[in-house]
Image 1 (spheres, rainbow, N blue to C red):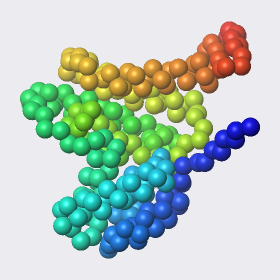
Image 2: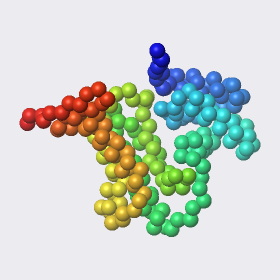
Image 3: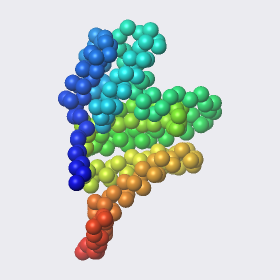
Image 4: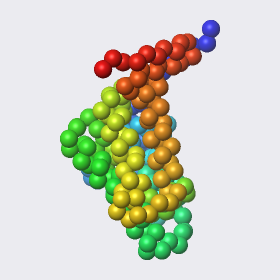
Length: 219
């Protein structure tokens, strides 16, 4: 019989140790521990292999730019290259830039507000409207550790955040475009998990390969 072994993503302490080891292995110098703390926060949800690749890309960045030690700018640029892809030369009008910026600000602002009211949510991290391979902009959040279980309030808040950009454009700019397609796809995934897999809706519908069970909840 084949055996599957599940391995959790490294937690905050694990990531710090892994990063230190790979920096030492690659001979990368650093004189500011806050840069390492920044790397640890950014790599939430990374596997050990992801972190190894991240550190190696940082080494290439330092060599290419003839920099002797770690910098916040280098760590941040390499993170964006790894997660979002390389920068893309794209001519955008002032109106288009404003629409992208407003869209991402709506995501980020709601993330910030919801985190202040519920510390189990991911906190707002940063926004970029620098065009990259498949995106025009993005709002990043950051959590204390990798989530193993989803709460109902977390999914509901995540759904609101996913739709915040499109709603903000509709309400304040009276602008509708195709920029929210990934947001809508993500929101659809959350809604499916909420209702169909986790049974958190007013109508319970739990489905998997073994059984299907549905019933109406009494009011």
